[in-house]
Image (cartoon, rainbow, N blue to C red; front, side, top):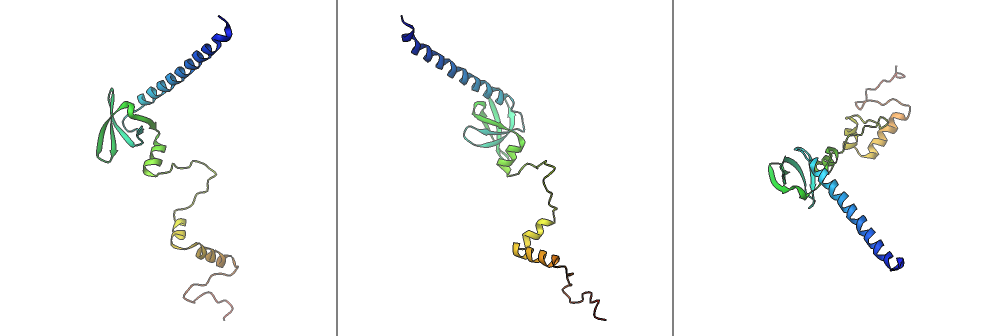
Amino acid sequence: MDIVTLLPFIVLIGAMFLMTRSAKNKQRQAVQMREQMQPGSGVRTIGGMYATVKEVHDDTVLLEVAPGVHAVYAKNSVGAVLDDDEYNRIVHGIEPEAADADTPVVPDDASSLTDSATDSEVKKTDLKKTDGEAEKPEDGKGDDSDAK
């Protein structure tokens, strides 16, 4: 037999070996991920449903799919165990707090100004304050120092 005729078989066997090795690694990682499940963990099922783990058994897991609604799933149906920040962002819409020191902090009362006033009203108010003139109270009893 010539080496040239055996070369396609050798390449085919090598490719099959690499594919099965990759599949075994993915399967091992999935088993490790499912072993990390504990009560209180947020998970996503392979069907795309998000739930909270309530109990973990040998082959099954009890999930809370809605407040007060529990369902038993096979462990293999869990597609991903999510960290708390990601679960809260997806399910509850809660963004994780930014821990950056250079992020400007907006005081709580600053949002009320933009909620109740339009941007143009805010700009007009800012312009009045920067004209160099002191604002007069609306009752007309301002400080008239030149009217003596």
